Length: 317
Image 1 (tube, rainbow, N blue to C red):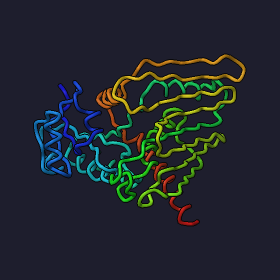
Image 2 (image 1 turned 90 degrees about the horizontal axis):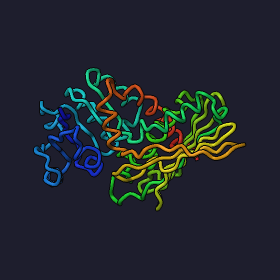
Image 3 (image 1 turned 60 degrees about the horizontal axis):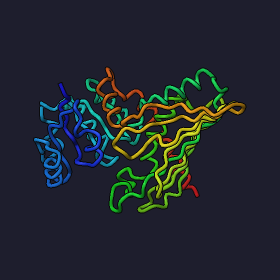
Image 4 (image 1 turned 180 degrees about the vertical axis):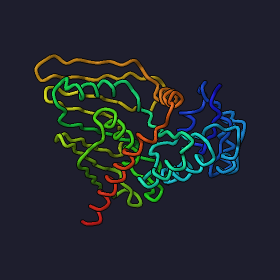
C-alpha cells in the first residue's frame, strides 16, 4: 500500500520529491498561505487542504509528513509531527542546532525521522569508502569539495539569517553526509569562515574545514553564483579520485563517474548507472527499518559548531 503522506509546505521541492510517485499517496497539504495551498492542491490533484499545519497533523489517515518550510521551522514542526505519531521526512538541514536535534530524538521515540539528503546512498560513496578503508590508493590525505548554487530570489528565506538562510546551511548536509559515508566524522578539529556580507548579513560564501587525527583534512568552499557546481576531490597517497556533478538540479536520472588518476598509471573511469535522485531518496526512506536520526546527529553537531565558529570570527574582527 502506498504511504499516505501530508505535505507541510506547498513548495517546489515538495512537488519534485513527493508528487507523482507510485509509492506515495499525497493525501493533504497545508501552507502558511491557505490560498497558495489551495492552488497547489488544485495543480497536483491533492484531495485535502488544511487551514493549518496542526489540523493536518490531526488527520489520523496520514501516516507520514514531509516538511519543506524555511530552515528555522524544520525542528518545530518535526517535533510536533513526531508527537502526533507521524513518521517525518524533513528537508535538509533537519535541524539547526544539536539541542534541537536532541529534542527531536526525544519526541520521536516511537516514530521514524529522515533528513531528505537526495545524494545520500548513491553507490559512489560505498566505492570511495572502500578505497579509504582498504588503503587501495594509500592513505587519504585530503578531501576538497566545491559547491555553487544559483543566487536566490530576492525576499526569500535564504536571505534571512533569522530563518536559517545562507549558503552554508544549503550545502552543509550534502557535504557532511558525503564525508560521513566515505571517511567518517570522528574529527579532531573544525573551522568556519565567512564575511557574512550578503543581504541582512547572511552568508553568501563560506569556507569550512575539518581535520582527522590521521592528519587528513576536508575543506568545503561554497558560494552563490551563476554556474551550478558540485564536486569532490579525494587525494590519496598514490592517486586522486574526482567526482563532478554529484548533485544536479534535474528531475531525470543522471549518470555519475569517478575519475581515478594514479600517480604512476593510467586514468580509470568508474561509471555508475543513471540515478534519479528523488526516486532513490524515497526508496531509501521507505526501505529503512530504522530512521535517520542517529546518523544525522553528528552532522548537525558539526554544522552548528562550524557555523558558530565562523560567527565568532566575524564578531572578533
